[in-house]
Amino acid sequence: MQQIIALWTHPRSVSTALERVMMERGDLKVLHEPFSYLYYVESGKATIPQEYEDPNHPRTYDGIKDFILGHGETEPVFFKDMCAHCHERLPKDDEFLNALANTFLIRDPARAIPSFYALNPDVTLDEIGYEHLVKVFQKAEKLKGKAPIVIDATDLENDPEGIVAAYCDALGIPFIPESLTWEPDHKPEWEIWKTWHKDAAQTTGIRKNVETFEVTVDNSDHLKSYYDYHFPFYESLHIHRIRSKKNG
Picture 1: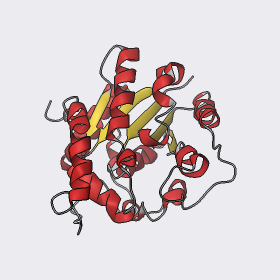
Picture 2 (picture 1 turned 135 degrees about the vertical axis):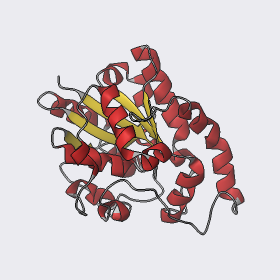
Picture 3 (picture 1 turned 90 degrees about the horizontal axis):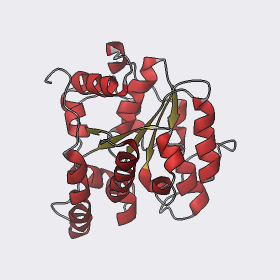
């Protein structure tokens, strides 16, 4: 089995930008949110429908898991996904988690929650996702005997080269500086959430996000309640974040 790198995250975490870096490497098979089909297509629990459905993509937890592992039999794999998509099964699946190099990406919920709400005003507390991340993190830590790799999006935006270099070093894969820049392009893998990845398709690298939102955790009691609930989960992962390779 080849190395399978899992980037577990929550929505609006700058994860697509990091995924683009992994695409630019050219030495990994990149799978984009494969468990999205379980949550948005199969479960019937989502507040919005997936924008595009590949008729050939598996929809069940076991089918998606086999899809990922099948690619790993012949080539190194990187996939990023939201724990909220598969949180009912994933923390109980020791065999699958043991087969993965589990890594995590988090973003300050004061930034992620308004970004999510701007695209989906019906977003639920559950879909925000930090609580699910912590449960998977804790299980992966227990299985592997050490804390998994964690990236904070603020660190990534402030120092893409140093953080990506540290991420690669922690994974035992070569750091490829050329993977940090690219030509603007909408990747076919992003078709399932084309509207959501519009900004990512226009980028040429990881840059500091300066987006602003009309509704925020500072002026909405509704979003503030989401923030208050999820911030402790974010904080518990934030203390494990990796440091820049350049800064030690």
